[in-house]
Image (cartoon, rainbow, N blue to C red; front, side, top):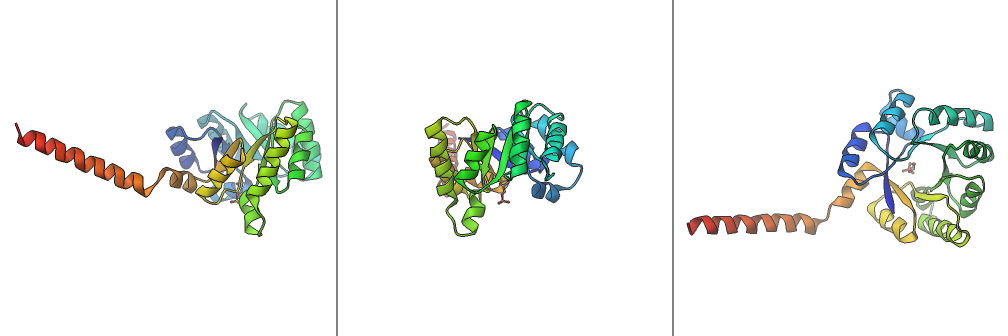
Length: 220
Ligand code: G3P
């Protein structure tokens, strides 16, 4: 399973990309509103930093509006993917953009049926929001599991991006369910690195190494 970062924060993107742990970025209007600034120039900057798919969301509610926005966003850089919400107009727009070779990430997916529909119109990616399902007392991972099974049975090429990740366990559950990608907030990527036993292990190795050096130099 590949990892993307779910943010529009340029510093965070640069930091985790330089670690080599992420291969794409997902954004949405809420993430943009946290950062401010000009949306298109920010997307262009992100697309120039990360050599991988960058999802930029269309906000129109009509088929033609979404298609126009999609074409404009896709013209910014070759690695831009158009994020389109699951709705009838979004499905129709995805079909058109797909026929033009523009990749779409269908977002706000909360059921296996929605994921099945996205695949019919040629979405390159679907984004089931597992955390938001958990928030309302459903089992987000179970829905993800169903999508993975259905896509496997029918050899569907649409890639599954596990989204709305709330904690490190969601990342493990997404990997076990067979998601192609998990898009993970910055703080959770950082938390994934850490383990208290790793920290105490490093400390102990360094202490023992120091003791060895001191013993060696006292024997000279
Ligand atoms: O990419 C968007 C998705 O991950 C939303 O996450 O935390 O707003 O439910 P959240």
